[in-house]
Image 1: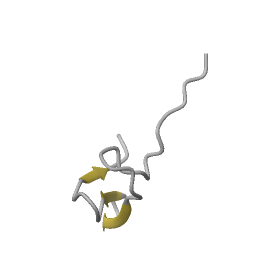
Image 2: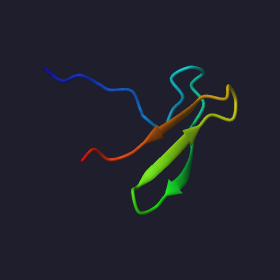
Image 3: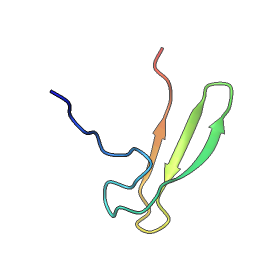
Image 4: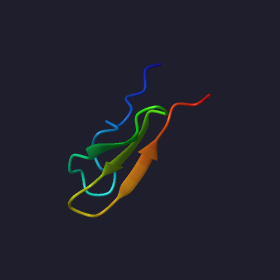
Length: 47
């Protein structure tokens, strides 16, 4: 059974595109922010 996952580049709150900003290029830490509603998430590889 295939499950469609939501696009991680789209804000889950308002649906606008998220803008990436690299915080630490050695750790691949990225902040994703929504300019419309102000949501901010960070992503970092596990391990």
